[in-house]
Image (tube, rainbow, N blue to C red; front, side, top):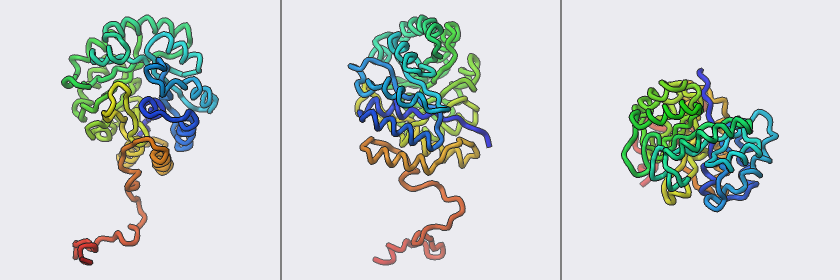
Length: 318
C-alpha cells in the first residue's frame, strides 16, 4: 500500500463560515487527533472585523500547540497576520494569493500582482520570525465566476513564486471546476517548477468531482491532500455557495478501497462527522449516512436480496 498524507482543513474552512464556540473547535481537533489525523490547517490570522468567526485563532493554537506530533498551519493575508501566527506557535503560514483578480481584490484588497509583491516582502519577514511561509493559489483551476484556468494561467504565477523563493504551494480548486484530466494537466505544469511531493492540493466538491480528484492526486504522488470533515466549509465572501472541501471520510473510504494507506480510523471519522452535524454545523458526505463498504460481515437481517425474485419485499407486501 502507498501512504497518502491528508491534511484536515475543517477547523479553518468550516468555522470561518459557521461561528461556533472556541471550545467546540478545540474538541473537534481533539476528536480528529484520536482518529489519527496529525496535520491541520487550524485557523486564519486575519482581520476579525472581516472574519469574526476566526477571531479566536490565537486561543485555538494555545490550546492545541502542546499536543505532541501535530503539524499546525494557518492562513494569513498580511504582515500583521504573519507575526500573529509566529507568536501563536504556528508551524507554517500560507499567504492568501488568488489567481482570480476580482476575488483577490474582494478578499484581501489587492490585485494578484500586488499580492505577489507583498508575498515577496513577507518571505523576508518570515525568515526573521522563524516561521515557514508558503502560499495558496486560490482558484488555480478557475472560478468563482469566470472560465476555467489551466497551465497557461498558472505558468507566470509559478515562475514568479519560484523567483521570490516561495515553493510551498497550496493549489486550490476553490470552486470545483476540475475533473481528473484537468488535475493532471495543471500538475504537470506545476511539476516543472517544484516537486509534486512538496505540493499541497486542495480540491472542493462543489460539482461532485472531489473524491475522483483525490484518487488522481494520490496516484500522482502529491505530497499532501487537503480534506474537510463531512465536506463542511464555506467562505464569508460567497454566502449561499457550496464552499466545502472534499469530504474527509469519503476520501478515506475511497483511498482505502484503492489500496492507499491514510493511517486514519474511518469509523472514528464518521462518528466525529456525525457529532459535528449534531452540533448544528452543515455538512455533506455519503459514508456517514450509509456506512463504509462492508468487508466480510454478512448483510444485516432484512437486507438480503432475492436474485430469483428481485421484486423488493415492500412491493410484494402491497
